[in-house]
Length: 263
Ligand code: PEP
Image 1: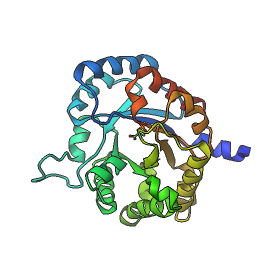
Image 2: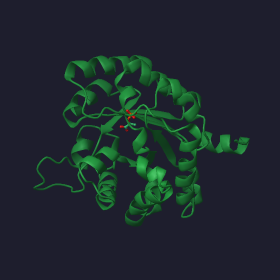
Image 3: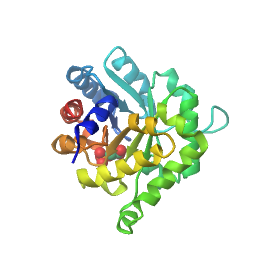
């Protein structure tokens, strides 16, 4: 399935395992989780760990993780730098709390809050403008997969960002392929299904910049657990994971990170 050439190119890419805590947590629960993560996660060459937490806990996470080998970030960002946008949080504000990453275009934001491709592209640009690394989430719904339009949907979501920010912007970004039907459902894409879409994404980027595409970190999200991480991360174009439910359990998240470190 993979020649040594693939392995060499893959080894050159940085891998990322990022936790998406969604709207979970409390000061006490976070402290226990972060204590566990700090004990279990140490720097590994070529692999980064990050947790994307609810806004109110950014100060806590910064205080707990500063000086550790774990980065942190948020789950969304405003497309605007400042102003009368009640309830919104800017990229500069996230930087004030030491954020490195921010999720952009998570399917829950697209589906529940009506974020459009255009808005997601604006948020991507705003995140980078503030010095954050956007983790751009793309993925198809079950209906779209069953209608065989996965590549059309993912291609359109990618094109929105490529058109507005240019291919060069992906040098400071991560792409997360998250099939909507696999998020929080316990139904994971098979490694082959995920690999096919990851290869498609890399191919779309390669048409504009082959070198950049070869080095682009593309992570998979959708019911990743310790039990299935190894086989997913072994695929040629899968460079780690975006982890929802399993990121709330220290031992699970640590085991997933260990699988990425060995991939
Ligand atoms: C997510 O929300 O990004 C996600 C992948 O969730 P889960 O791992 O719970 O499917």
